[in-house]
Image 1 (cartoon, helix red, strand yellow):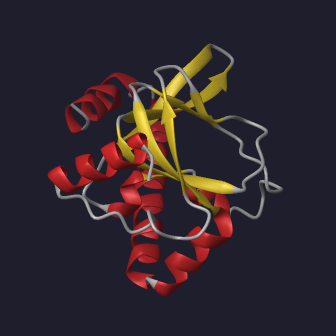
Image 2 (tube, rainbow, N blue to C red; image 1 turned 30 degrees about the vertical axis):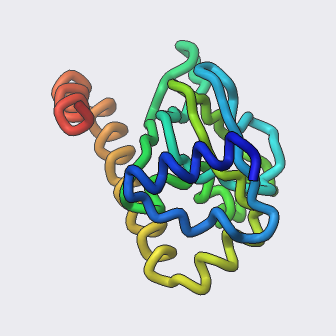
Image 3 (cartoon, rainbow, N blue to C red; image 1 turned 180 degrees about the horizontal axis):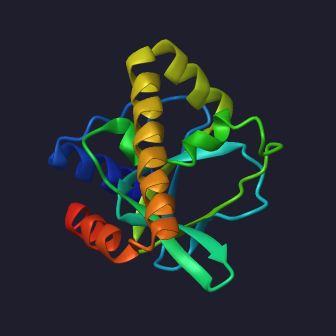
Length: 166
């Protein structure tokens, strides 16, 4: 175990975080600086990242420029810390990531090969259910934003979003 892996293991033990993916085959430890792309548009969906330290945001390029549409932070909920997991199950993406995931702060992640992650989620169906619940929560928030935008009610929705995520 190198120094970085030992530091990450000691940090997660101090924080009491369960590290379910750490010892699986092909899993590697990765470090990212603020502004680094963890996942870039056009990359093949060959892995996901399990965030163990830091904050990551998903960036979408719009006509107005880049918009930060959601973020991830270290969570006690395992599936809330998986970056890019929904792309594994998206049949419409042709195996290519369609969004950028950017480190907002210094980040430490485990890079998990897609087949290893999918097999683990199949073996732990409660985690796969959490992935689906998180996806539906995100979908509902997105729908509320879209409806508010169409109704001209963006200010109220923005205030609600800021209250929920502050």
